[in-house]
Length: 129
Image (tube, rainbow, N blue to C red):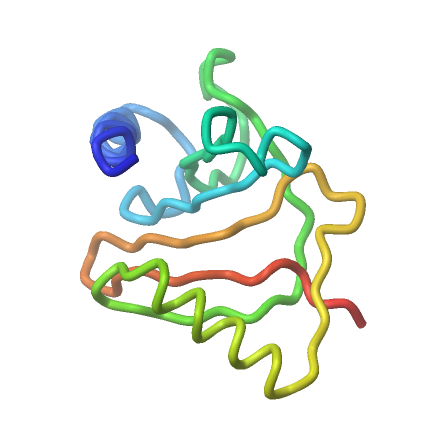
């Protein structure tokens, strides 16, 4: 997975220089679609994306998604350690008695990468009110 991620990261950073309406070309978000294929390593899907102000002039061959806002737990980890950040998210949810669910969402944000030195952050599923 590491090689695929690095290739996708470099391609997206390179493309962003030529795309309009990118909020911050140094910030990527990782999205997970929800569905039965996600529980199998051979069919698991991960989408690396950027936030845009508008889809105007973004080529149609880029996937255009609007993900609804949600409240969640976010843990930063400058080393990009997915497991450590995930464990911290889970510990906080347990400690506070918070419940999460993807609900009827087709996608949720799972990670945020800021390549300008702020590092990596892991997101929980949306909190249930």
